[in-house]
Amino acid sequence: MSAQYPVARPRRLRRTPALRRMVSGTRLHPAELILPAFLKEGISEPQPVASMPGVVQHTRDSLRKAAREAAEAGVGGIILFGIPAVKDARGSAADDPDGILQVALREVTAEVGDALVVMADTCLDEFTDNGHCGILTPSGDVDNDATLERYASIAVAQAEAGSQMVAPSGMMDGQVGVIRAALDAAGHGDVPILAYSAKYSSAFYGPFRDAAECAPQFGDRSTHQQDPAGPLEEALREVRLDLAEGADAVMVKPALAYLDVIARFRDEVDVPVAAYQVSGEYAMIEAAAANGWVDRDRMIKESLVAIKRAGADLILTYWATEVARGL
Picture 1 (cartoon, rainbow, N blue to C red):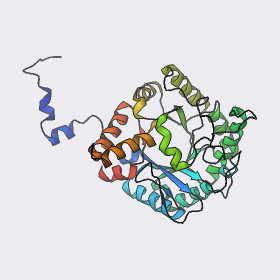
Picture 2 (cartoon, rainbow, N blue to C red; picture 1 turned 60 degrees about the vertical axis):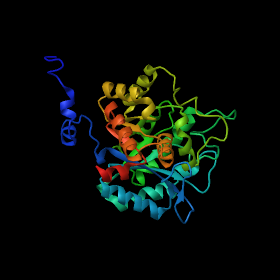
Picture 3 (spheres, rainbow, N blue to C red; picture 1 turned 120 degrees about the vertical axis):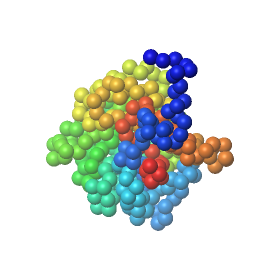
Picture 4 (cartoon, rainbow, N blue to C red; picture 1 turned 180 degrees about the vertical axis):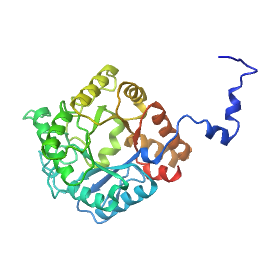
C-alpha cells in the first residue's frame, strides 16, 4: 500500500450514490436468477403457501402466466416442482408422460420458448406417498441403486417433455452418472445436468415441504443429505464426483448459511456454480418484514448480493421475478 491516513481515505469512493455504483464489485443481473415454481394437480385457483407469503401452488394457467412474467422481467430460468393428485411408493407420476410435471414442462416451454431456460427438479419426494426421495427397502431405508433407476427414467421423461435442463436433487450416490447415461442413450445428449452437489440436511427447508407437500412421513433425510456440521472436504468430494460423472453445473443448497461452501466451489470448479436461496431464508425475511422489524427490499437485495459475492454464478430465489424487475 502506497499511502496511509490522512492521505488514504477509502470513504472518498463511497461519498455519492454514483461513485458507489461505479465501483461496485458485485452486481446482480436478471439472467443469473432462477425462479422455483410449484404446480399442483387438480386445483382450479392458485393456492397460497401459508409459510411462504407471496408464493403459491400454481394451476396450469397461473404457472404459464408466472413463467411469461419471469421471461418478460429478464429472469434466466424457471425450475418446476410438480405435486400430483395421486402418490404411491415408487412415485409413479414422476415419469408418467401425462403426469403433472411433464404436462407443465410442455406447456411452459411452449409459452416462453427460448426466452427462459425451463428446467425440472429430478427427484421423487413430491411424488411418493411416504415423502422420501427414493425407493424404500422393507426396513424403511432409501435404496440408493433402486432409486437411481427411477431417477434415470424421470430425467428422460422430463427431457422428452421439453425440459432444457434437469436438476437431480436427491443426493443419491452416482445419480449424475446414471442420469447422464440415460439421457445420452435416449437421444438427449444435449440436455445439461445441474447437480445438487452439496445439499445439506437443513432446517431451512421447512416451508418448502409445505409448498411441495413432500415432508417425510417418518424419519428424515440425514442418510443422504449432507450433515450441516460435516467437513468441507465432504462437499468438495461430492462436487468432484458429480463433475467426473458429467455434471454441467453444480449447486449448493441452502445458500446463506453455506457461503463458505459456495466460495470453495467457485475456487475449485470450472463450471457454473448455483446456489439455492431456500424457503426458510425467504420465509424469515418475509416474516420479519411483515412485523416491521426489517427493511424488506434492502434485506432481499443484500442477501442476494452476499450469495453472488461468495461466488454463485446462478441463484435460485423465490424473489427472482420481483428482483429482476428492479435491476
